[in-house]
Image 1 (cartoon, rainbow, N blue to C red):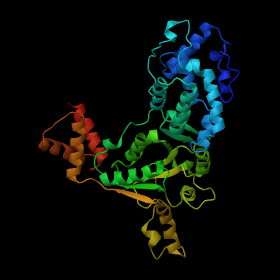
Image 2: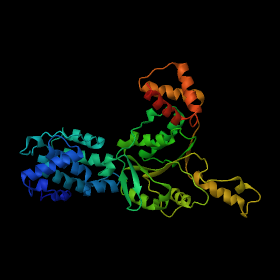
Image 3: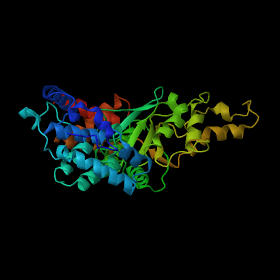
Image 4: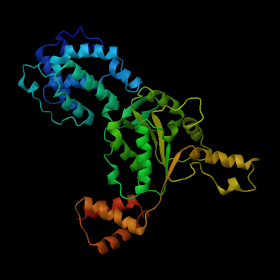
Length: 396
């Protein structure tokens, strides 16, 4: 095909598969390699071009991200022109000499939810306008490249890039038993955030093993299709928060939770000041598409001792010192407390976990074994309950 007429999708000219620069067998070899690596199926010309348009950045997809989902009428018209040129491939009308290229079945199929939804939608479209609008809506909802392919990322501060987490937990909010009020607060704030309404940074604080971190991870699975993504950073990376936030400004049609797990500081650690500045009060404003969610076992994130409050403390203005230690947690607009479950709640968590696995057990036997497990382990909490369930099922 002659692709020289492409305008905003000229990056496709680098693909010999579509320009005729490679012979048929070389094309077949490249397409099969990509099909196995990416999990593409069906007509491989059609599947690979769809994948490239969905994942590789171009002027349309990057403009949509920069402008919060908006696209100018002229830019859309130019994109429709490009789609008109590509339409024979996107309709599956271009086929290869090898039969397998036209109905390929990869060893492991692509399980990307966003890409699967796009390919299914394209099957029923015929005109260039319809196909162009399908890609534009895909970029609005899911983004392009890794932003579309992954729900969660880790921050590589040295390279200043986001690295997608391939095997992210599939936990959903319904999988978290109990803590209904805490989940209501968490989902209410997050719903407002993804809807573009005012929302707060969140501190989830309380007893260990009560599902604080799992709750944040579950949010990303619940709101992925609405554009929510998670970026986990570590305490030493806090000084690079301005760099991270500047990068996230490039994806204004998406919403990002910067996640700090198990957060606490010693008074001698200066990283907390970077976090304070990032949340509120720094020269760099926090982008409107970014919130910070943190979990901690401490209500006051900066460690404080009785000596800090004693008369013998050598600081002249002791109230100033106390205000400094409290100022970080106070900058989280929403603080959600998680308490250790009662004995009845602990046993109900175990019973519910077993029921979901299709296991029914005698209530008294469950009580005896569950409490015995609790006493010999780290106390009564959701994590201990899950460990008991794993043990119980493993011994059956």
